[in-house]
Length: 335
Image 1 (cartoon, one colour):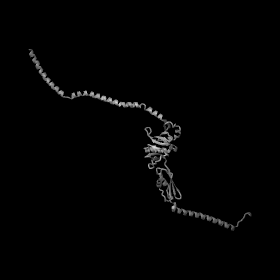
Image 2: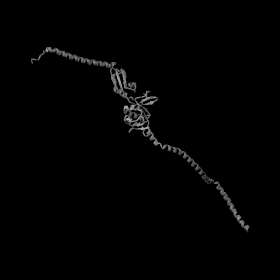
Image 3: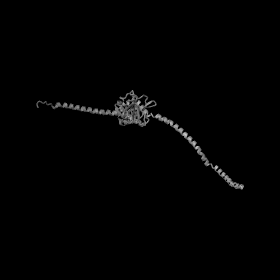
Image 4: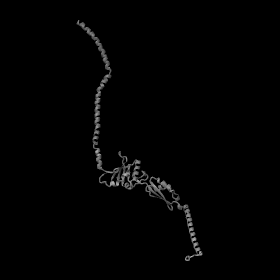
């Protein structure tokens, strides 16, 4: 107890007062800072400093910047905190070129619209221009380009919008490596396959496939094409079971099916002429045979000779009546 130093209360009072003063000053500074911040916020919201000074669009390649801004409804001069981002994003996503939209604020007065566009699966040619086709099958005819596209293949023969839409969805499922390896796609339906496709690849291989399951069928193209001898002309069939068919094999198959066609065609060509000649001969013979048959008909229908025969019969009757007179006179002469 005796070792502890005892500080008189008179000496501690100034120290306690100083600590209290510091704490009160600290509180005052905090309260004043909060008050000034609130005042600054009020001034900021009420002043032009909180207005939108610029609207920027990022990520757009096909969709026009002015169209996106106009669709969003965001106007410069509007309060940046009054923008309904959810509604504006939904309006922008209604554009057929846009897949997703995101709006952010960048102080002091900048609004940024970030766009994710629909992927382009191909281009169709129209009057020397290239019109993009999106994954939804939409054809952006109001977005023609004169530059030869390198990010998607050219599409030919897709006059059926339903077929184009189905193919576009299949292309969207295919990987970037497959899409970038295709140079041209031709829709060439046949009786056997109304969805048949012909593809010309960038590596020089000609491919045949079909719209249903196109992405799945083409998934194995890199490994299958690596085994194809590019010096041999032919077609690589990428359907359920991939296989390569050379032009020689195709000609042999088509030749075996058409060997008998020339003889049959020749026989068919001569048959009509021979048949026509035979028919003409039969008609001539029948006409000759029918001519004599008409005479009895005329005799039967002709009644004039019958009357003459009756008259001659009457005359003969008269003669026969006179004949007995001659017979009676004959015995007289004998006597």
